[in-house]
Amino acid sequence: MTELVKKRITPVMKKIALTAAFASATFIAGLTSPLAMAAAPMAKTSAPGYFRMMLGNFEVTAINDGTVELPVDKLLTNPEPKTQSALAESFLKAPLETSVNAYLINTGEKLLLIDAGAGVLFGPTLGKFVANLRASGYEPAQIDDIYITHLHSDHIGGLVSNNTLAFPNAVVHVDQKDSDYWLSQENMDKAPEDNKFFYKNAIAMLTPYQTAKKFAPITAKSQLTPGIKAVPTYGHTAGHTVYEVESQGQKLVLIGDLIHVAAVQLDHPEVTIAFDSDKQKAAAERDRIFTQAAKEGAIVGASHIQFPGLGHLRKAGKGYEWIPVNFTQLH
Image (cartoon, rainbow, N blue to C red; front, side, top):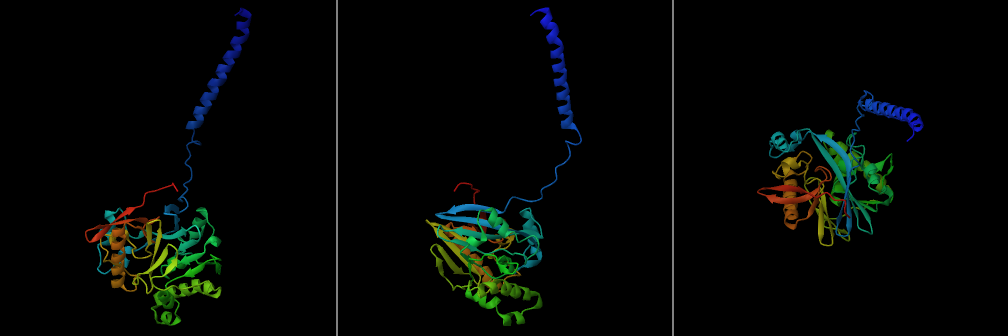
């Protein structure tokens, strides 16, 4: 390389080196500056609440309506359990943040919903069902039939929104005994003042479907549609109903409110809750259905076990063990 070329290149190379050094220093300073270290705002929300699995040829989608804090230490009774210590063993405490779950069944021919969430009837932390349904890929207008386990407000509050049918093409079904009990003006008049809201909410949610001729009560042990059967489990309410779903030899039992506090009632199935209309029957039905589900190896779907509320039951002494379903993204 000639001396003339060297003289021309050397200043250019020095300038490039200085520029690169300045850029590197600026980049490093940017990484450590107070502005770059500012904390990002917390999102404070979880992902949309739905979980999907296959049951034979049926698609099952668990949909969360939200959570609500329940003073379970004051609600569990008969006999009075050691609730706080039982919760502590599961790293929980009262009030207990409790899930409200519903289940969507796509049989390939029909789209069926079991329970409809609380809507605005049970506090501001619930009422997320429709948003989560849409996030899961379905629209309310696509649902053909809705089967209600019982007419307590947190299972029917999503049926009506802004005085219109939230599910305009669906027919609503509930056991005739529950319908007769909760839709009775006479029963409401006789009820204690602090229980009248159950009746008022049931009437408010069901009347629009009755008017639209989209309400059809069912009777005990009904075969509702191929693969879906109603099983009476009276006790929690007058007409509390479990729904059995079967496809290709696989079985799912949707148990509604047979259990509220898994951390207590799995070990002590005799413990009941203040919401039970007939505590003795409620405890007996829980034990009967749980024993059957454990024996059959059926999947259980529970309205108030932590979302998605799906798992198996295994007999463990006088109680039961809960084994959650394996998380899956394979269909």
